[in-house]
Image (cartoon, rainbow, N blue to C red; front, side, top):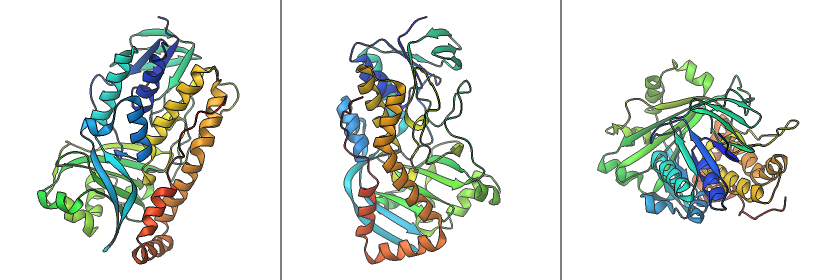
Length: 368
Protein backbone atom coordinates (compact mmCIF):
# COMPACT_ATOMS: atom_id res chain seq x y z
CA UNK A 1 0.00 0.00 0.00
CA UNK A 2 1.19 3.52 -0.79
CA UNK A 3 0.59 6.62 1.34
CA UNK A 4 2.68 9.77 0.85
CA UNK A 5 2.63 10.51 4.61
CA UNK A 6 2.32 7.89 7.33
CA UNK A 7 1.83 9.09 10.91
CA UNK A 8 2.80 6.51 13.52
CA UNK A 9 0.82 7.24 16.67
CA UNK A 10 -2.59 8.82 17.06
CA UNK A 11 -2.03 10.90 20.18
CA UNK A 12 -1.92 14.68 20.40
CA UNK A 13 1.01 15.28 18.06
CA UNK A 14 0.07 12.55 15.57
CA UNK A 15 -3.61 13.44 15.26
CA UNK A 16 -2.89 17.17 15.13
CA UNK A 17 -0.27 16.92 12.37
CA UNK A 18 -2.53 14.54 10.40
CA UNK A 19 -5.40 17.03 10.64
CA UNK A 20 -3.28 19.96 9.51
CA UNK A 21 -1.75 18.06 6.58
CA UNK A 22 -5.05 16.52 5.46
CA UNK A 23 -6.62 19.97 5.37
CA UNK A 24 -4.01 21.01 2.80
CA UNK A 25 -5.07 18.10 0.58
CA UNK A 26 -2.16 15.85 1.55
CA UNK A 27 -2.84 12.10 1.60
CA UNK A 28 -2.19 10.96 5.17
CA UNK A 29 -2.49 7.61 6.94
CA UNK A 30 -2.51 7.49 10.75
CA UNK A 31 -1.59 4.20 12.42
CA UNK A 32 -2.74 3.91 16.04
CA UNK A 33 -2.03 0.72 17.96
CA UNK A 34 -4.97 1.07 20.37
CA UNK A 35 -8.32 -0.06 18.96
CA UNK A 36 -10.44 2.35 21.00
CA UNK A 37 -10.43 5.18 23.53
CA UNK A 38 -7.75 4.81 26.17
CA UNK A 39 -6.06 6.78 28.90
CA UNK A 40 -2.36 7.66 28.97
CA UNK A 41 0.09 8.58 31.69
CA UNK A 42 -0.31 12.34 31.55
CA UNK A 43 -0.91 15.24 33.93
CA UNK A 44 -3.84 16.28 31.67
CA UNK A 45 -2.99 19.93 32.31
CA UNK A 46 -3.63 21.92 29.14
CA UNK A 47 -1.66 25.15 29.46
CA UNK A 48 -2.67 28.31 27.69
CA UNK A 49 -0.50 27.49 24.66
CA UNK A 50 -2.08 24.06 24.29
CA UNK A 51 -5.58 25.53 24.60
CA UNK A 52 -4.78 28.07 21.89
CA UNK A 53 -3.40 25.41 19.58
CA UNK A 54 -6.49 23.21 19.99
CA UNK A 55 -8.75 26.21 19.42
CA UNK A 56 -6.77 26.98 16.27
CA UNK A 57 -7.53 23.49 15.03
CA UNK A 58 -11.23 24.15 15.65
CA UNK A 59 -11.42 22.14 18.87
CA UNK A 60 -11.67 24.48 21.89
CA UNK A 61 -11.13 22.22 24.93
CA UNK A 62 -14.06 23.74 26.81
CA UNK A 63 -16.34 22.26 24.11
CA UNK A 64 -15.14 18.83 25.27
CA UNK A 65 -16.02 19.50 28.89
CA UNK A 66 -12.58 20.65 30.00
CA UNK A 67 -12.45 22.18 33.49
CA UNK A 68 -10.98 25.65 33.97
CA UNK A 69 -7.83 25.84 36.14
CA UNK A 70 -6.71 29.32 37.17
CA UNK A 71 -4.73 28.79 40.38
CA UNK A 72 -1.67 26.86 41.50
CA UNK A 73 -1.28 25.51 45.03
CA UNK A 74 2.09 24.09 46.10
CA UNK A 75 2.23 21.78 49.11
CA UNK A 76 5.25 20.45 50.95
CA UNK A 77 4.79 18.67 54.25
CA UNK A 78 2.53 20.94 56.31
CA UNK A 79 3.17 24.06 54.27
CA UNK A 80 0.96 25.32 51.44
CA UNK A 81 1.32 28.31 49.13
CA UNK A 82 -1.31 29.43 46.61
CA UNK A 83 -1.21 31.96 43.79
CA UNK A 84 -3.17 32.90 40.70
CA UNK A 85 -1.93 31.50 37.40
CA UNK A 86 -1.07 34.12 34.74
CA UNK A 87 -3.49 32.37 32.38
CA UNK A 88 -6.51 30.05 32.42
CA UNK A 89 -5.54 26.44 31.79
CA UNK A 90 -7.82 23.42 31.38
CA UNK A 91 -8.05 19.92 32.78
CA UNK A 92 -9.31 17.22 30.43
CA UNK A 93 -9.02 13.44 30.16
CA UNK A 94 -6.64 12.28 27.45
CA UNK A 95 -9.10 9.59 26.41
CA UNK A 96 -11.61 12.29 25.51
CA UNK A 97 -9.10 14.68 23.96
CA UNK A 98 -7.25 12.13 21.84
CA UNK A 99 -10.46 10.62 20.49
CA UNK A 100 -11.76 14.06 19.52
CA UNK A 101 -8.52 14.83 17.69
CA UNK A 102 -8.50 11.51 15.85
CA UNK A 103 -12.09 12.09 14.80
CA UNK A 104 -11.11 15.53 13.55
CA UNK A 105 -8.23 14.02 11.53
CA UNK A 106 -10.64 11.52 9.98
CA UNK A 107 -13.12 14.25 9.07
CA UNK A 108 -10.29 16.28 7.52
CA UNK A 109 -9.63 13.39 5.14
CA UNK A 110 -6.91 11.37 6.83
CA UNK A 111 -7.15 7.58 6.84
CA UNK A 112 -7.11 6.42 10.47
CA UNK A 113 -6.23 2.79 11.20
CA UNK A 114 -7.05 1.57 14.73
CA UNK A 115 -5.71 -1.49 16.48
CA UNK A 116 -2.76 -1.75 14.07
CA UNK A 117 0.74 -2.25 15.45
CA UNK A 118 3.88 -1.10 13.65
CA UNK A 119 6.37 -3.95 13.62
CA UNK A 120 9.20 -2.41 11.63
CA UNK A 121 10.45 0.70 9.89
CA UNK A 122 12.92 0.43 7.03
CA UNK A 123 13.65 3.94 5.89
CA UNK A 124 10.14 5.12 5.08
CA UNK A 125 8.80 1.62 4.53
CA UNK A 126 6.40 0.95 7.39
CA UNK A 127 5.75 -2.67 8.37
CA UNK A 128 2.56 -3.24 10.34
CA UNK A 129 0.35 -6.03 11.61
CA UNK A 130 -2.05 -5.12 8.76
CA UNK A 131 0.48 -5.00 5.92
CA UNK A 132 3.20 -2.74 4.55
CA UNK A 133 3.06 0.93 3.63
CA UNK A 134 5.37 2.74 1.27
CA UNK A 135 5.62 6.35 2.41
CA UNK A 136 7.50 9.36 1.19
CA UNK A 137 7.55 10.77 4.73
CA UNK A 138 6.99 9.27 8.18
CA UNK A 139 5.82 11.29 11.17
CA UNK A 140 6.98 9.42 14.28
CA UNK A 141 4.58 10.40 17.06
CA UNK A 142 4.68 7.44 19.43
CA UNK A 143 4.91 9.61 22.54
CA UNK A 144 6.98 8.22 25.41
CA UNK A 145 7.00 4.78 23.75
CA UNK A 146 9.93 4.00 21.49
CA UNK A 147 9.47 2.14 18.23
CA UNK A 148 11.67 -0.94 18.34
CA UNK A 149 12.64 -0.47 14.71
CA UNK A 150 14.10 2.98 15.46
CA UNK A 151 16.98 4.09 17.70
CA UNK A 152 15.71 5.15 21.11
CA UNK A 153 14.54 8.75 21.30
CA UNK A 154 16.69 9.12 24.41
CA UNK A 155 18.82 6.67 26.38
CA UNK A 156 17.48 5.29 29.64
CA UNK A 157 19.30 6.55 32.71
CA UNK A 158 20.07 4.73 35.94
CA UNK A 159 18.48 7.50 37.99
CA UNK A 160 15.50 8.12 35.72
CA UNK A 161 11.86 8.63 36.58
CA UNK A 162 8.80 6.41 36.87
CA UNK A 163 5.40 7.95 36.13
CA UNK A 164 1.93 7.00 37.40
CA UNK A 165 -1.61 8.17 36.76
CA UNK A 166 -4.87 7.45 38.55
CA UNK A 167 -8.30 9.02 38.22
CA UNK A 168 -10.34 9.53 41.40
CA UNK A 169 -13.90 10.52 42.23
CA UNK A 170 -13.53 13.11 44.98
CA UNK A 171 -16.01 13.81 47.75
CA UNK A 172 -17.93 17.12 47.59
CA UNK A 173 -15.80 18.37 50.48
CA UNK A 174 -12.54 17.57 48.69
CA UNK A 175 -13.81 19.06 45.41
CA UNK A 176 -14.66 22.32 47.15
CA UNK A 177 -11.23 22.42 48.77
CA UNK A 178 -9.45 21.67 45.49
CA UNK A 179 -11.50 24.28 43.63
CA UNK A 180 -10.09 25.59 40.36
CA UNK A 181 -6.48 24.95 41.37
CA UNK A 182 -3.85 22.49 40.35
CA UNK A 183 -2.17 21.19 43.48
CA UNK A 184 1.51 20.29 43.26
CA UNK A 185 2.73 18.11 46.10
CA UNK A 186 6.54 18.22 46.32
CA UNK A 187 8.11 15.35 48.24
CA UNK A 188 11.80 15.71 47.39
CA UNK A 189 12.25 12.66 45.15
CA UNK A 190 9.49 13.69 42.75
CA UNK A 191 6.13 15.38 42.75
CA UNK A 192 2.41 14.66 42.44
CA UNK A 193 -0.12 16.85 40.65
CA UNK A 194 -3.83 16.77 41.44
CA UNK A 195 -6.46 18.64 39.42
CA UNK A 196 -10.03 18.28 38.25
CA UNK A 197 -10.68 16.77 34.84
CA UNK A 198 -14.46 16.49 35.18
CA UNK A 199 -17.41 17.44 37.32
CA UNK A 200 -16.34 15.16 40.17
CA UNK A 201 -13.29 13.48 38.67
CA UNK A 202 -9.71 14.42 39.43
CA UNK A 203 -6.44 13.22 37.96
CA UNK A 204 -3.52 12.32 40.17
CA UNK A 205 -0.36 12.13 38.11
CA UNK A 206 3.07 11.81 39.64
CA UNK A 207 6.68 11.17 38.83
CA UNK A 208 9.21 9.71 41.23
CA UNK A 209 12.88 8.88 40.99
CA UNK A 210 13.25 5.22 40.10
CA UNK A 211 15.69 4.61 42.93
CA UNK A 212 13.31 6.13 45.49
CA UNK A 213 10.44 4.04 44.14
CA UNK A 214 12.58 0.91 44.57
CA UNK A 215 13.51 1.95 48.11
CA UNK A 216 9.80 2.22 48.96
CA UNK A 217 9.27 -1.36 47.83
CA UNK A 218 8.59 -0.87 44.15
CA UNK A 219 4.79 -1.07 44.39
CA UNK A 220 1.96 1.39 43.80
CA UNK A 221 0.47 0.67 47.22
CA UNK A 222 3.74 1.54 48.93
CA UNK A 223 4.12 4.71 46.90
CA UNK A 224 0.53 5.77 47.58
CA UNK A 225 1.05 5.17 51.30
CA UNK A 226 4.10 7.44 51.16
CA UNK A 227 2.07 10.14 49.41
CA UNK A 228 -0.68 9.89 51.98
CA UNK A 229 1.90 11.02 54.54
CA UNK A 230 1.56 14.43 52.88
CA UNK A 231 -1.31 16.10 54.82
CA UNK A 232 -2.63 18.09 51.85
CA UNK A 233 -2.94 15.08 49.56
CA UNK A 234 -4.31 12.86 52.31
CA UNK A 235 -7.14 15.34 52.91
CA UNK A 236 -8.15 15.11 49.23
CA UNK A 237 -7.86 11.37 48.69
CA UNK A 238 -8.75 10.02 52.13
CA UNK A 239 -12.37 9.37 51.13
CA UNK A 240 -11.93 9.41 47.34
CA UNK A 241 -12.92 6.51 45.08
CA UNK A 242 -10.33 5.25 42.56
CA UNK A 243 -11.82 5.08 39.05
CA UNK A 244 -9.26 2.70 37.58
CA UNK A 245 -8.67 -0.91 38.56
CA UNK A 246 -4.98 -0.08 38.76
CA UNK A 247 -2.89 2.97 37.93
CA UNK A 248 -1.27 3.50 34.57
CA UNK A 249 2.51 3.43 34.80
CA UNK A 250 5.51 4.14 32.62
CA UNK A 251 9.22 3.83 33.37
CA UNK A 252 12.47 5.42 32.21
CA UNK A 253 11.08 8.89 31.49
CA UNK A 254 13.96 10.83 29.88
CA UNK A 255 13.02 14.35 30.99
CA UNK A 256 15.06 17.06 29.33
CA UNK A 257 15.53 15.09 26.10
CA UNK A 258 15.93 17.16 22.93
CA UNK A 259 16.35 15.21 19.71
CA UNK A 260 19.56 16.07 17.89
CA UNK A 261 19.73 14.59 14.38
CA UNK A 262 22.76 12.35 13.92
CA UNK A 263 23.61 11.92 10.29
CA UNK A 264 21.01 11.48 7.60
CA UNK A 265 17.64 10.57 9.10
CA UNK A 266 15.96 10.64 5.72
CA UNK A 267 12.30 11.58 5.79
CA UNK A 268 11.45 10.61 9.38
CA UNK A 269 10.06 13.49 11.44
CA UNK A 270 10.04 13.07 15.23
CA UNK A 271 7.11 14.77 16.96
CA UNK A 272 5.98 15.24 20.56
CA UNK A 273 8.00 13.39 23.20
CA UNK A 274 10.03 11.76 20.43
CA UNK A 275 11.45 15.21 19.67
CA UNK A 276 11.42 16.99 23.02
CA UNK A 277 10.40 15.96 26.51
CA UNK A 278 10.01 18.80 28.95
CA UNK A 279 9.82 18.43 32.72
CA UNK A 280 6.24 17.56 33.60
CA UNK A 281 6.33 19.94 36.57
CA UNK A 282 6.03 22.86 34.13
CA UNK A 283 2.71 21.58 32.77
CA UNK A 284 3.72 22.28 29.18
CA UNK A 285 4.21 18.75 27.84
CA UNK A 286 1.01 18.71 25.78
CA UNK A 287 1.74 22.21 24.50
CA UNK A 288 5.16 21.03 23.27
CA UNK A 289 3.53 18.09 21.47
CA UNK A 290 0.98 20.33 19.76
CA UNK A 291 3.67 22.87 18.85
CA UNK A 292 5.74 20.15 17.18
CA UNK A 293 2.70 19.19 15.07
CA UNK A 294 2.04 22.79 14.05
CA UNK A 295 5.66 23.38 13.05
CA UNK A 296 5.97 20.04 11.23
CA UNK A 297 2.85 20.67 9.13
CA UNK A 298 3.96 24.23 8.41
CA UNK A 299 7.46 23.25 7.28
CA UNK A 300 6.33 20.12 5.43
CA UNK A 301 3.99 22.11 3.19
CA UNK A 302 6.88 24.45 2.36
CA UNK A 303 9.25 21.66 1.40
CA UNK A 304 11.57 21.77 4.40
CA UNK A 305 13.80 18.84 5.36
CA UNK A 306 13.59 16.85 8.57
CA UNK A 307 16.91 18.35 9.69
CA UNK A 308 15.50 21.85 9.27
CA UNK A 309 12.39 20.88 11.22
CA UNK A 310 14.31 19.38 14.15
CA UNK A 311 16.65 22.38 14.29
CA UNK A 312 13.80 24.91 14.31
CA UNK A 313 11.76 22.92 16.82
CA UNK A 314 14.76 22.80 19.17
CA UNK A 315 15.12 26.57 18.82
CA UNK A 316 11.45 27.12 19.69
CA UNK A 317 11.01 24.68 22.57
CA UNK A 318 14.59 24.24 23.81
CA UNK A 319 14.58 27.28 26.14
CA UNK A 320 11.33 26.11 27.77
CA UNK A 321 12.73 22.61 28.28
CA UNK A 322 15.90 23.94 29.91
CA UNK A 323 14.03 26.30 32.25
CA UNK A 324 11.56 23.60 33.21
CA UNK A 325 14.34 21.11 33.93
CA UNK A 326 16.11 23.59 36.21
CA UNK A 327 12.86 24.09 38.12
CA UNK A 328 12.28 20.35 38.47
CA UNK A 329 15.85 19.70 39.67
CA UNK A 330 15.59 22.49 42.26
CA UNK A 331 12.33 20.99 43.56
CA UNK A 332 14.23 17.77 44.34
CA UNK A 333 17.13 19.41 46.18
CA UNK A 334 16.30 19.53 49.92
CA UNK A 335 17.89 22.91 50.65
CA UNK A 336 16.60 24.50 47.44
CA UNK A 337 13.11 23.14 48.13
CA UNK A 338 13.09 24.47 51.70
CA UNK A 339 14.35 27.90 50.63
CA UNK A 340 11.96 27.98 47.68
CA UNK A 341 8.95 27.22 49.87
CA UNK A 342 10.08 29.86 52.36
CA UNK A 343 10.40 32.45 49.61
CA UNK A 344 7.03 31.51 48.09
CA UNK A 345 5.29 31.78 51.45
CA UNK A 346 6.74 35.27 51.85
CA UNK A 347 5.84 36.22 48.27
CA UNK A 348 3.24 33.91 46.64
CA UNK A 349 3.55 35.91 43.41
CA UNK A 350 6.78 33.98 42.80
CA UNK A 351 4.60 31.03 41.79
CA UNK A 352 2.83 33.20 39.22
CA UNK A 353 6.17 34.38 37.85
CA UNK A 354 7.47 30.81 37.71
CA UNK A 355 4.42 29.68 35.74
CA UNK A 356 4.88 32.54 33.30
CA UNK A 357 8.61 31.86 32.89
CA UNK A 358 8.07 28.25 31.80
CA UNK A 359 5.70 28.95 28.89
CA UNK A 360 6.43 28.38 25.23
CA UNK A 361 6.87 31.53 23.14
CA UNK A 362 4.06 32.51 20.77
CA UNK A 363 4.21 30.50 17.57
CA UNK A 364 5.55 32.27 14.53
CA UNK A 365 5.89 30.65 11.13
CA UNK A 366 9.64 30.40 10.54
CA UNK A 367 11.31 30.35 7.20
CA UNK A 368 12.87 26.99 6.49
